[in-house]
Length: 493
Length: 95
Image 1: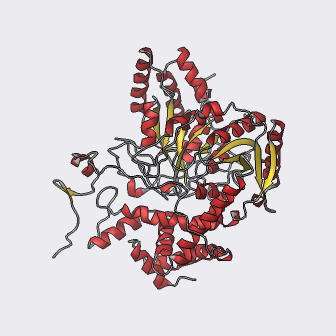
Image 2: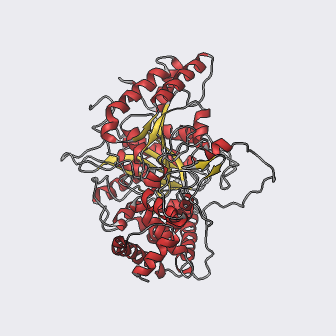
Image 3: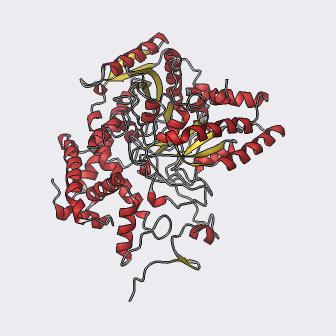
């Protein structure tokens, strides 16, 4: 048994018992990063020295009687969260030199509870992507492989965090989910990923992609560990104008709640003829597991589901084009000189942003431009109202919804790259929850015939993550998913 | 609606993205592909629907109009690509 085999809660118990020190725990994970990161490219920056310092401090604090919820536990941070004094790139060339002088609220909350950060994880550029292929720092390779040994994507945009947790390079990680960027990579890498309610986790200090859709959230190997991390990350923050002034419940306790008597909705619009039979079968199996635990399953209708993605691809680029206007090469980030100020802006941005980011800025600029605003942006906002109403109506008669997380298992690097829309379709089951701001969690539930993980998604009412965790914990226990990726700490060098 | 090359150039200008002439046809076709796919939203009758800007069902908070932080000139300037003393430096814009 190596220290990297322990899930977060078990590692915390071991520290409490004094079975090992935080320094030993952190060192074990840093060794694994050193061995595997050259193959996975999950980390953009590894903060080994800082992590060891923090681990020593955590051990000293524990010796004095301290016991924070995450004291001395090594975590990885998506390189979209600003970390004071540690380079934060958003996976983009334009932010390559950026060292924030401040700390995001979410990472400050994790530090408050004693967490140790081992590094900053790779991501699609500005979190725009479903494959991690758009990072300016190179793609992340999934720790999972198929028998023909193709390199697979870990999903995206939080692919580095997902790969790092799956390969046991850290005990948990932060991600952000704008259209599925936590749940889809969790599904692809066989781990748990949770997107809470909009406003539950502060966006302050998180590099903005689409502000009304961006949700910070955790990755972990178990549902309860994800619940522990979310409990630390969440909370009201006056520095985020959309932060919710709501009490944070005990999410870990919710994982032990019974689902007996709960009504679980099955959205009929999520079923399609081209859904792979094994994903449909796993979905039916998930419903069976919940019935066996005493829940009732009922069909519900979310009639505007099919328009979610198209509406999203107006709203998200529109917000992105506004948010990314700040990258002008003047105040921070990379600059490329020009013949005059406009030329400097244009060359700085054309050179600093990759193709997918430029494409989305162009779409966003167009749908917001004079004469097209009503036809595109305003119409998309009305569709968004209809999508939220679909969920509100459904949650009048059910307590949670169960769906597949993604329409496929992980695909090979380079696949789906020829057509942006093909890539966008990966998020068909996850995007509606972002449009509506409701919580969603992906749980590893089975394998496809190639031996790759598949996740199920639980959606619940706004600010009722607790029910989502309860349902997810039942699925986790029934599925007994214990397959490990071939590339992981201690297994392959 | 289909974008012509002139519109593609105009959007790039609005977005302050330098565009080489050689890149226009590819970008035009990608953008038209995406916009064509988005057209499906026209199937939906949205008459009388109030637009929804964000999912947060909350009113914007107000706070006291008071200074909460400051005196961090060096921190603010620490990431400047070019500076002159306590100022950001840019190419000359006034003749």
